[in-house]
Length: 216
Length: 278
Image (tube, rainbow over all chains, first blue to last red; front, side):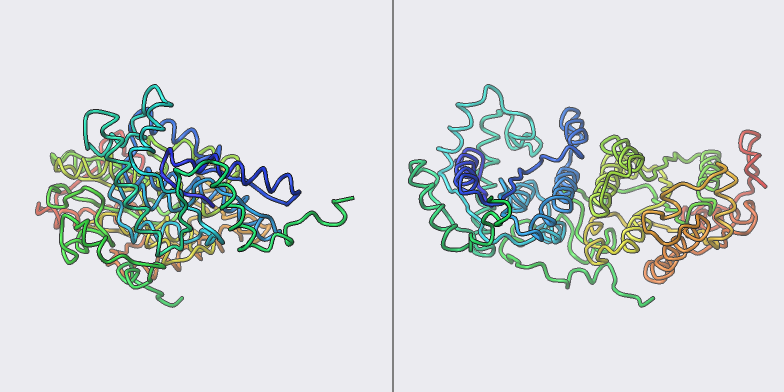
């Protein structure tokens, strides 16, 4: 499971980890935050018409996650699969917390989520992360930039302030939720080596190796 | 059924970890004490209950208990008395109302996801319709409220504390009426409406019985038990939903008039609604 702010390099790293495990033939499943078709139309409608409030924003994502959890994550964990998640409930804790949702309410909302075996948190300095996003994107979207918080009328500035709050949120979770903190500014291959070492040491990968029958 | 817990007690069900310093940072607009007067738990984000000048009246009861009939009549009566009235009900939000309809039609959803979709639907209406209406002094008549939503999920095995926590930011109604009827009576009334009983109102997803009648009765009885527990905890005003429409309506009007500080006036429905006045 990886977490990190936008532009921290987490998705690239998780992709490489996935490739490594795939090439090794392990049974695995990859899942992304906010990806279930179930709530896509509602999320799109909410964003287009700017209907979303901190609570409904949070609830809609929780519904999406619950759907993936009940249909994919939990059954696959039961069936001895490795599950790789690009973002997890901590994204909600950090981001919805930055929007003002009470922490206690958020913790309860996601109580059904299985606790990850490893949570990688990619930390990159705010400027680096913000720069990576701004340079790659022509225009920031309304909610992405946290415009609903009314921090600033300037989108890039609002985005920066919003990301800073989110980062504070993550920092508070590092200890309580046992994050493995990695330096998002390291070269990609170095970071990946660290990640693979940690996975190999903490997880009994043999359990997820191809079954004899399948290997034939 | 034992009276498991109160909404307020969910404070005690500890989340895995708490950050006291973080809680300190985001002080709610109102104090804890005051907040529990207006909300079931935490206050709604960015909302000041002092701005409320309207009245929130909830009518709960199972399918076939006469809720919508009574709401139509109450709306007409209140409007004739000069009050602005707005209604709300399940699956009516702009955000996800239609999505839930689709999910139900396709039966393509698991219980937890469905519970969260209903919760989204509820808060969308609360924040975009109910609260603004209450701020402008309007009377909101809610056709069902969080109690139905919690009860439906509890009977499907979702943790009660979890559900209470979800709805902790819901506004406490000024009055909550419960139209209590026997499931057997409700079955007949519902059947007459559409010459059929729907999959969901019979709780058929719960595999209680292959017989439609028994499935309906068992399911609605389970829900009713949850309501009996709520009724004590949340000061429901219980009315006999099997009494004639006009009798139930009179009792509703008396209590509402008292709440609004007006004299309980006589009322007979206009010709448009006369058919309801059986």
